[in-house]
Amino acid sequence: MALFVAILALFDCRGSDSAAQSMSANPDPLASAREGLLLCIGPKIDKRECNTLTRYVLDSASAIETHADVTMSAEVVMSLKFVTTIQSGALCSTFREEDTRSATFTIAGRPASAQETSFLRDQVASNMRSRPTGVICLNFLTSPQGLVAQVILDGVRHPEMDKPVIWTSPDQGYVAHP
Image (cartoon, rainbow, N blue to C red):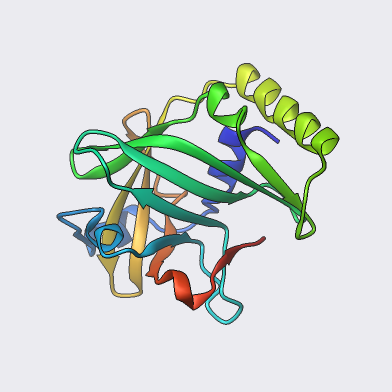
């Protein structure tokens, strides 16, 4: 249940190189966040659910504080903070073990107990130590089907991980859910 694996699992197999060629790039990846909107990765619009729901805090020009609710399994959602930067027009983050040490969890919609939280943090940290995490970047492109997050891991494009995204107002009630 590694954080990196969970983040990657959010990007199921979608997209292709030919599809990417018909997309246009977004010049400011945080334009919508500057308007107070949340990024919903893998939206289920009819249920107002996201695989990951992210809020960006834009207090600095170079580093952006990111708050993400990440679906880890059918019942577990992890909430954590980490730093995001803009590199070549993409949002990029390195997921670190220390980021998971302050993560909180919900299990089947209820807050995890202290014991469950400790166990889940240890599991995520252990799995992160056993796998290289590297830098994951999201490049937002507009396609005929809507907005798509292109995934780049350690500088290598992974079109099989592309995922639809939407920007949504906090008052729309979207939540992270499998």
